[in-house]
Image (cartoon, rainbow, N blue to C red; front, side):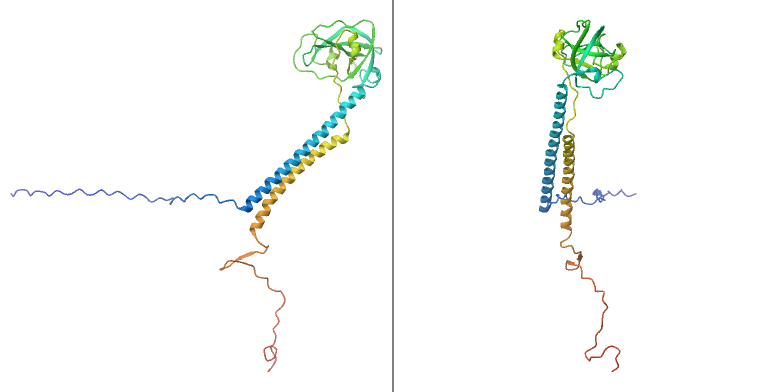
Length: 312
C-alpha cells in the first residue's frame, strides 16, 4: 500500500455581498421652492388690504356716530325726567291709588298727608354702604297705605315715626327689584311693594315716595338719594343710532365683496387677452378661425362663359 499523497491546500472563496434591493419609491425629488408672487398678484393683494382697511375705518366712524346719537337719546331722557320732577306737586291720590296701575305718576313730585302707622317700619341698606334708608308706612286719608322713605341713618337703628297728622312732599317712584342675600330681621334689601304687602297692613299703593330734603331734615334724617325713572328721548335720535349701525354693517359687507371682486378680476385678466378663445396649434396659440358663412355657395360660369349644364 503506497503512502498517502499530500493534499494541496485550497484558497478560501471570496465573500460576495448581495446587491441591495432596488427602492420601490424611486429617487426623492428635490424640494422645489414656492413660486414667486407675481407683480399683478402683489398689486391685487395691496388693493384688497386697502379696501378692507377703508371699510373698517368707515364702519368704525359710523359705529361712533351711532353711539353718540344713542347718548343724545339718553341725555334727552334724563333732562325730561328732571323737568318732570321739578313740576309743581300734585296730590298722590291723583296719580296713584291702591289696586290700580300707575300710568302717569312715577317720577313726579307729589303731596302726601296722613298718619304714620306705629311700629310699621323697615330699614333698607344703601347700596354703597352709606347707611340705611328708613321706610315707614303712611296711612292716607282714603285708607290706602303708602311706603315713605323718610331719610337715611348711618346705623341700623332709627327713631320711630312721628305721631299725629303729618304732611310733606316727595317723588313718587316705582317698586324696586329685590337683591339677593339674607338680612337681619327688620331689614329689606330693597323697597319692594309686593314684599311689604305681605308684612304690612293694606291696601298698599303701587309705589313709594321719597321725601324731599327739607321734609327729611325736619324729621332729623339725612336726605335720601332719588334715582328718577329714565325718561324717553326723541324717537328720531334713537332711529338715527340704529341707522348708523346698519350703515356700518353695510360698509363691512361692501368692503368684503369689493375685495373679493378684485381677485376675480385678476383671474379673468390672466385667463384671456381680448375675449377670443385660444386654439393651440403646432406653431403656438392662435385665435380661433372665423365661422363659416351660412349663405349658399353660388357657382359661376367657366372662362368660356357657359353656365353649368348649358349645351356646347
